[in-house]
Image (cartoon, rainbow, N blue to C red; front, side, top):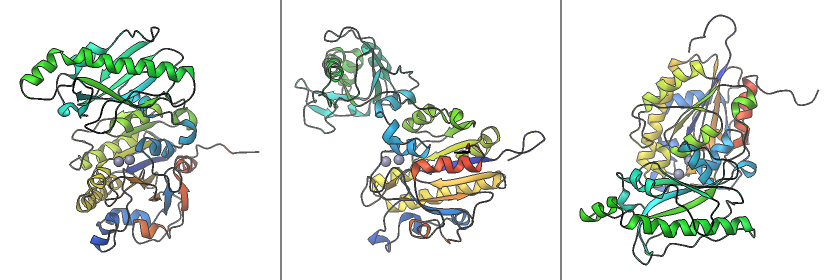
Length: 422
Ligand code: ZN
Ligand code: ZN
């Protein structure tokens, strides 16, 4: 990393979030975790020479969603600021929400005439969703007349529904039953308020009418003709509003950017005021372009003070229950970090490596375990642990911290935190 111009270099920091990297010891693999089994010389070197410890992404024992965990890692207390998935999804899709709007995460799905769900992803539809979305966008509702309905398709079978207007509530249940062979649910108010009742009326009518509009749409007639499942209904879930948070740039006076592919993470980053950097070949999967990410991150550190580098592959392997794939993903991350640390000036840059939660290969889902963390950089105390893994960092010098402590800890090192008191 070169200093730009003359004068004092300002310090930088990179937060590397390995999604779901934490794990539990696995009986079938010598009682080791994937991180313990992996060959990680670069991570081990950073851990030995940096602070290490355990981190509870949200609170001890609480399995966090990636959305809540990322909120926390950026320094926002999710119990205070998290307002549901839908608002984040909308932000990820580039939709601006007013504070009174309610957004939902949606799937194009397949139902029969009885509204029984046969495919929640409409045969993983890829083409034609823009036309289907157009047919729904701007729908005038009979039950709630003073609302605007906006529907936007996003990636593959996914989309976002926005109810724009006043007197709405995000405290309503999903219409998506999250399983097959059962009927579409009726959305119910989750609080006793006229706003929640009004929102469920609007959502239930939209759901019913989406079937009427979509079932005979030319895109679906063609899909049926070629033997594919029709995308004949919109199933909404995760009602949310736009979180009212102050962006990091304003909170700390830093220039921030993120390198992430997953729409949800990108959405949260945008809300936190980060610029989103694209990397060619970054997929969000096991085959992602790890080295491209390292290069993009080292470039970003020339222009930004605080960079987030997110890697999804570890979470994917965890959900698949695939120990070997997770170990391999961790080894790829290690090489990525090797490339990155070669390219930047480590006397001026902090490197933080952690996970947003544990996605254990035995649980195949997120769990409430703490995750390992290391903070390497100028003026940090060396922990002298020999490995970067769950077992080793438990003896590290950082102790056990909460997710929302990380960003303030880093900002303190960057000299961005004001004194509390006189
Ligand atoms: Zn995650
Ligand atoms: Zn996950």
